[in-house]
Length: 254
Image (cartoon, rainbow, N blue to C red; front, side):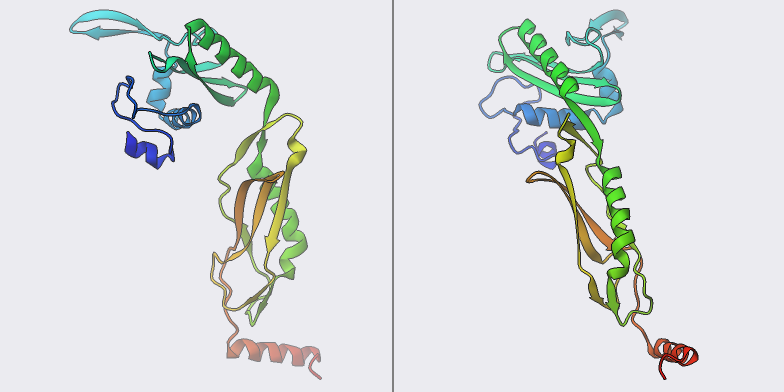
């Protein structure tokens, strides 16, 4: 469990036991619980279990019905998980996943005195998120800006002694494809494109030409590298000869 926490970058999480009972060295944070939940929900079996209100199981030939302790499941629109919790140290806790119109949020409430309080606080967080936030397709926005930039700037890139004039450019993967943003703050997203315009042949495929930096005011949201899509070879003797003959044919060298 601690190895997985380290893999997920949960630097403020440490496990002592698998059952989670109170221990001074057993801890996490609300934010890292949300990150862990986001990862766990990618497991289809886990996602199905936490979205199940009740089920009949058979133990030693006897049938038994067990119910989910998540009081929001089946009660609040869009709630599809995840987990309740209680210890004397942690109080009443609830991690909730809610999906509406293909938008999914995860809320975490810790340290409540009662189940009623954790339910009420979770519902307020969920409604606040859906009422005040929207999503931006950042990948689409980045590619649109890149195509516009290419039309105006790709021919400005000069490769000395190259055997061809045009350089084919592409983008590396956009990691944050869709991002949440507070409604009304869409115009705070700014995209800047940086590039180096002079190179020396040969140029290998995948050479970094520049990058695209996406910012929300001073916060950097994403950096995507611009790279060459194909290699560019250096001119050889034959290339110079054909170029010279072409100039003779056009009369440009006279």
